[in-house]
Length: 447
Image 1 (cartoon, rainbow, N blue to C red):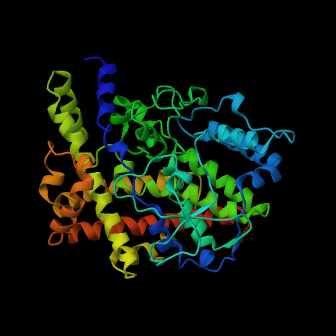
Image 2 (cartoon, rainbow, N blue to C red):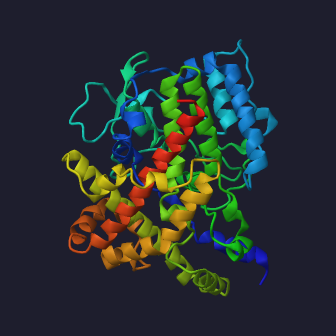
């Protein structure tokens, strides 16, 4: 058997799991994670500012920042896809605001459909908001999924807003279409073959939402054998996004654009938070390398059922974990009560036990920790959820989530404690890494 088909079939192992988001809605969790952090809780209100105002005022500085980021990425990021020279952002006072904004998105290699609107995602603990409601289509280029929990309100340029609200809202924003259809082989419209990312390294390039997976997952710790058999799994761009958004946050704070400082910080932290989820840091947390090799060999020999079953099981467990976590957080928020997950998100005790924030923190600390937690998390899902949702390879939970979410919640009442403890531990890491990342960015900005 040649190495080429083995590599090809290895890619199929992550085909369905990569379609899921890591943590559902990040914002409600980020409200809890940051609300008692002094650097956020004591920060002065900031003035809302349209993106084009920041771009126009700091055009030359932004150009220098993006050039420096690209030079750094080429030197330090493994598997980096160099930005084509034609996409370089340069200062041009004569162009329109729309042209400047489009050039900025191209230089970051974000989807041209990215909204970056003036909005907040309301803390679900707030009973109401005096601000006008905003349709999701004004904020996100991705249609609402079944059971979406986001609730948006409009901001007006010049109004004052709390940094906590800006930060927590932005922590969910990269899932709103920033990273869709950026590879040469994506079938969605518009596709961007001129962005230089090449072919999609894993996931299904024909499914739009799946095209964001390489920007939100990081398989950095699978081991030498796995990486030899499936080298494209190492091509992920989470670290690039953290550096891009984080550098812009620092620049915005340093140049008096505090609103965009907090906004870009939230965008950066989203990608950090995604890697606290074991299903985003491991190709198959519930399977050994030997088992993955065996089911791929069987598929090569004409018996693909076990391989497809593994894909379905990993996907189901990912969706069940996400559904459980989101339902718990939202129910407690709406009733303004605290439980183990809220307490874990606020827990500051773990923050100082990690190394200081650095460019290697995402890979060496966050992803490594989540990868190590993978087997334990997968086992907790199997124990905590009804068997048909997590052990039947013929049952696709994702396709039935809207119909079966209530059934899952009901049937887990008597058997959820092990899963609750595991999710609480994961969210304790989520909160600590989010705060440590923010501290690192504020330190770089001299705040």
